[in-house]
Length: 294
Image (cartoon, rainbow, N blue to C red):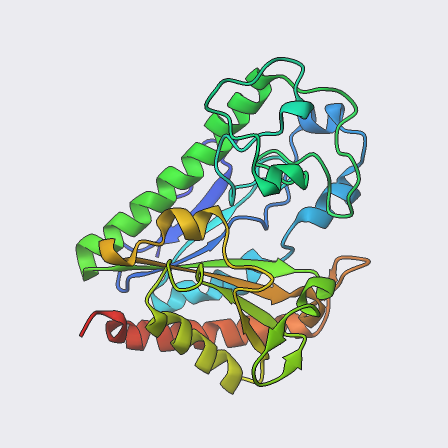
């Protein structure tokens, strides 16, 4: 097993991969990082405990054992509130900055309007993060030090998978509040779900992948919904190009399955989910050839 994490002490992500890759699978966790730089905390109106509400807590731990099945792993080390890796890099809220943003900044998206751009305005419970205006120079530094290196590394992993196996399969792992999970509707179970599969309504991957993942998770006892309330973010949309042999699927897990949402402490469900994700990875590692066009 090879670790490709940059050797610098300020590394913002971690990669574990074999070369050449034994499978085309790439598992990512962009929101499970827990590090918040001192300069961010100095500018913040809230403490680390509020910032941590934005994290997909422990998702990196849940997917870590899948490397043994041949999947490549990439996980964020810095917190989502510092830089949201599942957003376009320049998806920035003009109201957060003391200077005028450049023309290429994307300040009109629904995510920016909700306070959840690449650099979030609000923490997990809707609290304003910053006590002062930021500068575009600060935003640019975060993009260049955190967003760009992560996505450059992810792009390399996918390119290597395509070169070796003829396709790449990206599973982008997240967790969602129980309140969001309760809003989903599934054909088999009605209101409420445990896991949401987001494939951009079929645009980001072959339906064979979504069907296979759904079937395996349902067989394990999970209630699975598709595309609502989460159809897939920037990563799924940006990389999911079935015609170019890259399939991307976002997987959202209800935090109530493994976490006390008030204390952020894990429950006994963490071990079960970790084992089940490992089982799913083993199935995908064995059956990925089914995903190729007939």
